[in-house]
Amino acid sequence: MTCREVSGLLSSYLDDELDHESHGIVEAHLATCEHCQAALEELWQVKSALQSLPVVKPPPELHARIMEAVSDAPAAEPALRGVETSPKKGRFRWNLSSFRRGGFKTAALALAACLVIMILSSAGTLHFARRYYAPMAAKEQSGVAPQEPGTTGSAAFEEGGQFFKMAQVPSGDELESVQPQSRGISDTELADQYSATGADTAGLERKLIRRARLTLEVSQGTVDATSRQAIHIVRSYQGYIESSSMSVDESNKQSTVFYMTARVPSEHLDPAIDEMSGLGVVTQSDTLEQDVTEQYMDLDARINNKVQQEQRLLQILGNANTVGELLQVEAELSRVRTEIESLQGRQNLLEKSSAMSFLSVNIVEEGSRKSSPSPWTDIWKAFVKAWQDLAVFVAKVSPVIIVLGAGYFLVRRAIAKQG
Amino acid sequence: MALPNEQAIVERASRGDVAAFEALVKAYETKLYNVAFRMVSDSEDAMDIVQEVFLKAYQALPSFRGDSKFSTWIYRICMNASLDHLRRHKKAQVYSLDAPVEFSDSEAQRQVEDSAESTEEIVEARFLGEKMLHVLNDLEPHYRAVLILCDVQGYSYQEIAEILDMSLGTVKSRIHRARNILRKLMDAEQSFPSYVKQDERRDDR
Image (cartoon, rainbow over the protein chains, first blue to last red):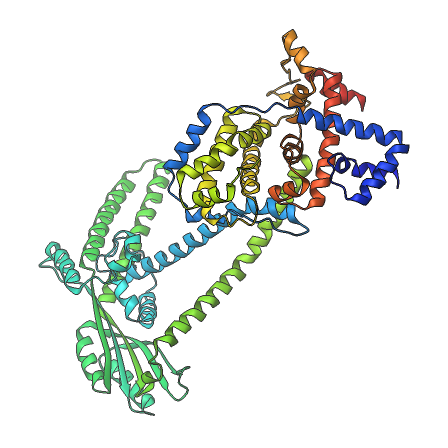
């Protein structure tokens, strides 16, 4: 055995941690090699120096401090149960362990971030819904394309009654609306809110946005014919179809489903619904009214204000002497004009929305609903959907994680090399 | 080393028996304090670490399944806490004696106060143990950890492997390397007062 090989074993030899065979080899080599003897002597000096380090007496207050901390602590926090109790075996043990220790915090952070994203996105959905449905929605109803409320409305209807109800929650603390108990806000409470709003705006022409949803059941094979009649009814009341679709139900291949969203003049909404109800058996019928009078008046006031400002600016423009003044006033004028137009756009949208009610109609075949009576189907669907969403999420964030991970390891390596 | 009926005491403590836990604290606080103190070489920090270790142990005890010895388990928590502490305070502690101090328009060499002032201290510093204190802090934390466990606390390689969660081979090579590095640091310390040695060594190159 060479000196180099032996010198690598000297520390273990010193600590008596070699197996019998290696011990004998090292001993035999030491007997003949002065160099290795000296090396062993040096190692022994280090070891004995360390062994001679005095045992430090801890400060007397340590014990009291520990017991105080322990007695103050809540017993056995579940979060800390993750402290490992058994060593892991494996080749990359050290790397893994150092990663694991640093990784605990990282993992916890990542988990927290995921939760925050989930909460934010659900809160975002609620907020989105509230913007169109809540009776007392925030006054800042920013300008949206005219067709947007229609499509959102239909999307909301598709989600079913639960979403519909949630959307009615009056605007308030966002988190509160996530809690289940505030979902089930009763109709009377809603009515109270209407009247509260009404007190301020009594005597004015009410601006109401009405949304109705109707589900009809017709006999087999007549969905197509019924849908034509429904479209005809909409048109006969000076309404128009925003979208319509005819599809075969996935869960029940024989069943055809017709779905449309339409806009009907508000004054004709009720007769239109009545007439449509005659086309088949009504299995569901909802209407929702949103009072936007206050928003409308608010916009009105703001527009008036801005128009007066514009007038004053025009006067100033006439008295302007220098080119600099002129340019300044013009810039201000164009800003005010833009604001007026944007406010007017929002007012027009409200006007149009209240003039033309939203009507969405579902026409299904008789008996198609019975095909999925089991709640397990829904649960299973939700389960599958959740996994699909999760997979998409993972796929979307994986590049970020790969890049961050690579960066993390490079930085660690650089730091390790430096150290 | 361990209490005579440690397993029973651990079991009682894990069910929330504070008196039993206090027995464990009494049995281990000095040892753990020494480990932490040698690791971070600051009494206040070491006390904080030991307090934190026992708090963690108390809260995690119900999940301690006993597939390793209690001593191994609590030493592991203590080592992790110490290494964490060092990692967190690394930036504040480590600076190079070689690197010049930078000012906005000029730079100056760092002046280090000679810590061995009195004659008594110089005499004392001749003792190996005292000298060791000086150089031990210069050792990289992971090397310091194995030597503290092996030579100061007298743990076997197998136990060290469990405490630090690494393989036996890693423990072996790490101890060997740590001793060699420490040896060199000690030689340097012996030849020159601490504030000269850095510059001298640089000139040797």
